[in-house]
Amino acid sequence: SEVQNQAKELERRAKDVASREAELDRQAAQLDEARAEAARVGAELEARAAELDRLEHDLASRETVLSSLEPRERATTEKEAELEAQERKLRREAERQVETSKRLDRHASDLAERERALARLGQTLMARRDGEHASEPTKDVEIAFSEGIEALSAAARSIRRPR
Image (cartoon, rainbow, N blue to C red; front, top):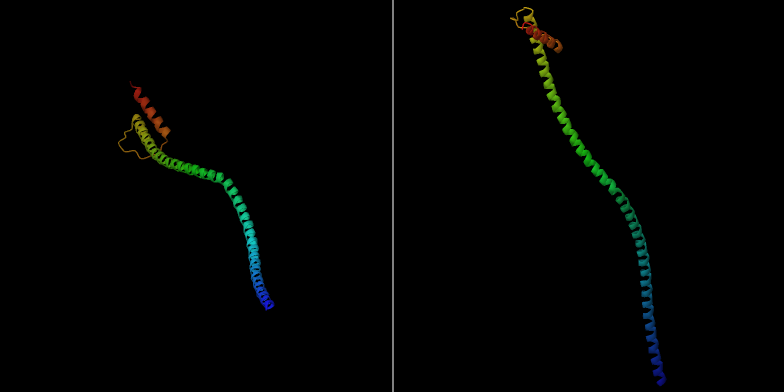
């Protein structure tokens, strides 16, 4: 009976050992799955790290390009401002030129009218000197300014002589 008890005890221990071995096998399988998952995640992390490195390199390259463009952009902005100021200045100058042109046109018209009046006056004075009467109005005759001045000068000389 003691042998039977020992046999039963051995059988029970054998079942315990088998049960523990099954549990250990299950845990080992879970550990293998966890290691496989860790390896897969590690590989994915390495791939993402490589992609991140590539993106950082691209970003650094772009930042370098941008930093080299900034001085050119500032220079362009300054040049645009200068050109706008110059354009405003030229526009104001053009407006002044237009106003000056209008004034000169009016002045030229006034001078032409005065030249005609002086020429008529010279004709009238010459006619009086020559003994003609200027009772009838003289018609508008185009006479050069210099001819009108010469007639006035001649009239003035003839008036001074009697003195």
